[in-house]
Image: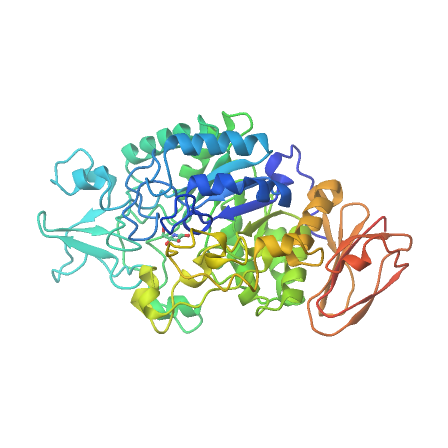
Length: 537
Ligand code: NOJ
């Protein structure tokens, strides 16, 4: 039995369903082809109807968009493309009335090269903000100071001709890394946190949160070996010194202390894109003093197979410190959508994958479009917007396929933007999956997602109960949640008969609405890719 530890004082996010809004692709109110805050406000009714508890908004701050908002030029303002600070405050208030909280995206690893801190920093070696960034003299051969490479390809350093020094960038040259050894940087971020939290922002998703502190001595990364994951082998090195130094935990503890000064505490949800689950667990600190939630990338990257997924889940649960709480997701703006990657476009597989995410012990995070089984878009070379796609085309199309706009109806541009406008990225065909059609169809993926969220909300077992896996065929994930709820997920195209641990339960929700309220006894015949939740067993 794993994951049975009770959370001593559950906060709102323990039982919440989170929903990621990629603002540029969500809804366009002013007809300029990209989404905005007024567009999001128009669709709050959809999110309230769906039953989600909080939205994580991808960056909404001013940005030259070299990396679509992840190159921040001002941490305490709103990009004019998306609206104004007033729009954001109105969103927080309106969403709050619907019981929906707003989380923003904090990008502490780097700024834009157009951020005033960097413009000052590069103006002189004596500038007030010089030490806000990682500057270093050339190496002995006159080249970069060490062998670090950028996550987006190419060297991790760019020479600044004026000073003759290099600056570090773990991503694009337009995204200089901040120097988290600088007290000034730490203090400045304390203020940024307070700026938003004082305005009612419920917390942050923290971009590449494992990466922010680098080796103070700037030592060379060790070479990758044949046993290392593919990405490390591709880069030729292990990111040993340019990422995840022990002092990152000091920063997280500092933010947790600030969060704890608010009522309710503000949520710290880290993008902890690490391969090792023990490293992932370390970002929870003691369980009560660092991140509240840390994204689990090994789970996202696992195939939609029962054993592979329960293996990641159970190893994670075993490693998490007492009081720590997992978070589960299948899609985001950086990885292929679950409807494509896990489900290969098959709505039956989408349904069971969503039922899984929404019934595991932990906080589920849906990505916009998951609820209708939206698949990745097709992008041609001249439509590419993502700098990573541009760099690696045709070997890798980058992240545009999972960023295509949200289809709200079957009309032109799916109701995302005006009929006469051009969406910033091409739409997937809105006739295949869209919100309006699925709202009208009780057998749709959307209708199921809503029923499952509602069932979860009614069930303390599903919200906060422990997890215990039960004996089942290898292709079926059968587990108990809490006192008396059992979830059966057939993650295969073959029907399976399973034995329930007791009689007398009834189906509270499943991938097939025809099952609802049925009483299965102690045996259940699951169809291909079918999932059910049985209560009272
Ligand atoms: C992770 C973000 O999710 C991704 O979109 C971005 O490009 C990198 N961090 C750099 O900020």
